[in-house]
Length: 293
Image 1 (cartoon, helix red, strand yellow):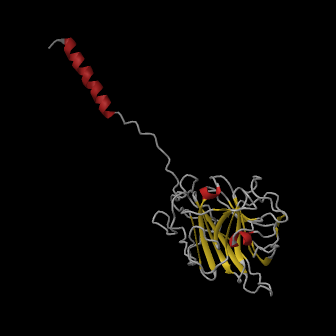
Image 2 (cartoon, rainbow, N blue to C red):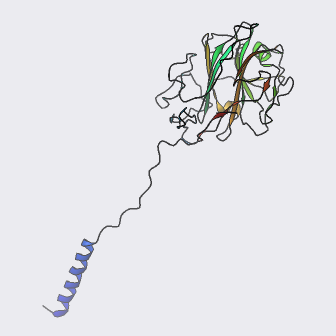
Image 3 (tube, one colour):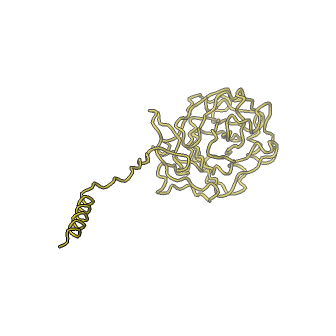
């Protein structure tokens, strides 16, 4: 065999052997996502438990414009069913403010015991525990973007809609010691117990109170729902109905009134009923804290 041919074959074999023995280059590693960290995009809850830990991930939120029947589906097992019954553990992920203030002698049927809030990327859920005397209304006011300067200024008689029983009941005298507090929406009921109200219900529902404070706009449709027993109400609203985005902080407070320049002595958080100086603050999705302030 010619010498040059042997050398060529030897070199080719040696190169093949070295290639076969070389260690493969490892693929770049990709850090795993922390599945327990709620974010604004995945609809996680933003509630804080009493021990300071984060609330559970409720999965994707519902479309704020879609019809909502109050039921909880398998994708969101941590969310409450809107049926007026405060089941054990149902609101364990909520931010809560409570009161033990006894009712006034003149209005023994009026009590406010607890206000609970759960917020997802698309919906706000509220539970209000208490009772109302005949002719009075249980009311919750919502500042959709606390601290931005938008909404109704609480001074004197900020709300004055004379048309409709619920609208009149919401027209209560309120002033605020918090310059940042400017409510945009309100929920209320004059009737406990009550089944889920229909469109046009004049005793229960949600209102836009800021666009025209003397002529409230009913926030109705399939994205709102309310149900009450004799001692509690549960309600939910699609956040698109009140113009909420993913970054605003909500501020809530509850009162009992009858629209005749009269408030009961009940308030949540506990406060002077006619002068709001403390609210329940609910931060935007993806954050980890909520507090009364």
